[in-house]
Length: 175
Image (cartoon, rainbow, N blue to C red; front, side):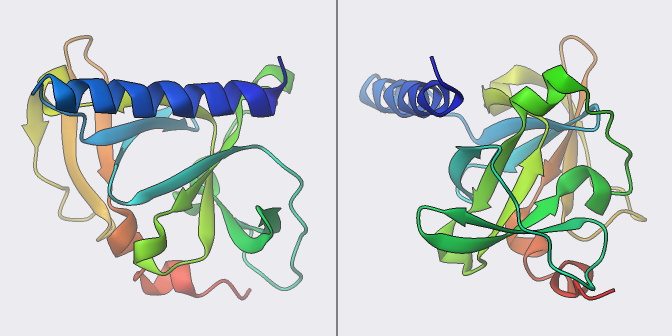
């Protein structure tokens, strides 16, 4: 199965699970879980757009290192941001890791033509998946939300794409 077909199947399963949960009156997931440079993040579903397999990105000269360039996604040019590099982390991407990379676009309602390069998609999460939460760190970026702790001791940082899309650093890609 090709990477593109696997991603379509993953998206179809997510949609199916959400529809089933709504029909049964169950609590619906609130976040898309992703991993970048070994860190776990939660992206509110309302902020996330489509998910694409890693694809060719054309570099743009005179931009910051975390801005990888532009990619053609369904006929639209989209700015691609390496989430790990934006957050000042150093990703270790071997051959296996490169095969799991995905591009997560911003929801069109946010009016930002951008995608985040993430190392792995980890599925959906809801509040019931976590045993504790902490408020955002005072010294953290404005787009970081609460931190959640799951039953396995993994810390998950909420990443608010709406606030990220308005952050002056994010909007200033020129080097």
